[in-house]
Length: 252
Image (cartoon, rainbow, N blue to C red; front, side, top):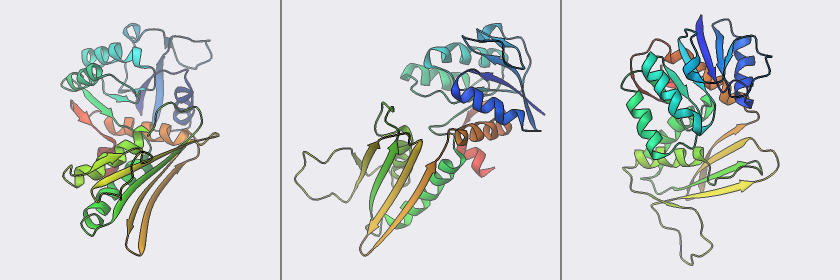
């Protein structure tokens, strides 16, 4: 049985993960951390991670940027693995992630969905074959009308995976409205759509002469990210210090 501390337990994702783990015979939440608590959780909740004295095998974090520094300090000090899901970290915080990983296992990914991470693996293989054959590469992402950033972090991660496979030779194009020229061969185009309550959809398009290959992933609820986080926690528990990614979970 994997014992989990849920950091950000009263947020939307914290509650989703709590429900998933409650139905999972291989894991249990032994404590939560959240600035606000109404006493409804079946486990003790601490307002500050530093006050948590409950022993656990791993921490799952879906909190806020301001809480990450103390979380990393706690994980490094107690040598407890952490699945770090909070996004929007500063460059300084990214450095702290790497520093903490010298003392404990830290898994961080741009997207926790198992499907998206499998997609990342597949498009690398596709790019290695199709790009040299002259296929153009475009990424289209769709999200709800409340999302602030564009393109999404996942769309950029998809582009980065392709570009890494292609030795970093491709440039990124986010807007063609001011350009009056034909498409360059070594560019990856990004298109962002915002509307309604779309949880998240990503299409990676390889367009060649007389044929098009499209890799697609659609998330219909935030539960897909929770499921990936729980799977990552099971993978990370007991692992030695170091930086881990969802690719390690997929390839295990």
